Structure formats: C-alpha cells, structure tokens
Image (tube, helix red, strand yellow):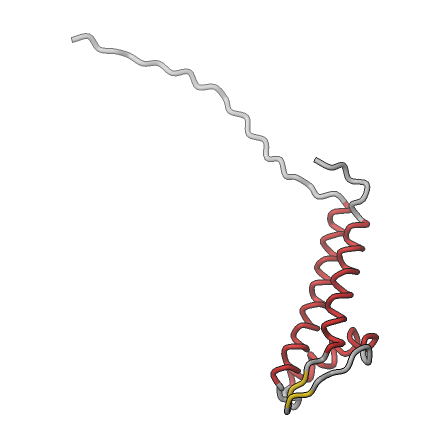
Length: 118
C-alpha cells in the first residue's frame, strides 16, 4: 500500500479590523432623534396616564406630568378635551407628539442633506 502524503502551504491571512465611523452629520442626526424620541415618549406617557385616570398623588405620575407639561404647554387650548369620569383625552398631547415628531425628523434630515446617496 502506498502512503499518500498531503502537504499544505499556509499562507498568512491578513485581517484588518475596520470599523465604519459615522460622519459628524450622522452622529448629530442620531442625537437629535434620541432627544426627540425622549420628548415624544414623555408626552406619550402623559397621554396614557391622563386617558387611564392615573393617580396624580403618585410621585412618578406627578413627575411625568411636570416634565411633559413644559412640552405640551404651547399646544393647550387648540382643541377641546373631552372628559370621561376621572380620565380625559388631552388632545394637546396628541398635537404635541405629531409636531415634535415632524420637527425631530426635519432637523435630523438637515444634518445629512449633503451626504451622497448610495
């Protein structure tokens, strides 16, 4: 029986760790989206608490009302707010969510206007 000998040559494999770095415009866009998303989330919690009739005596609920009140204030009084027992639909919160979402997307897009399209 003939014995076969296999030889292999090992070639050095070059591995370069390349990390894609985000441009300054992309980072700024992400920051704007994060801040806008935080504001929208706080207002959405306010809307949810109001529609479910959450206890304003609770520390967390009071904190959310106080924090979100700053962002909802410019939109108070645009539409009526129907009341259902202890809960009511705060339409100013809905308007605020829509307006802040549009502003967030608009400002975010401004940072990447000159980026080439792939």
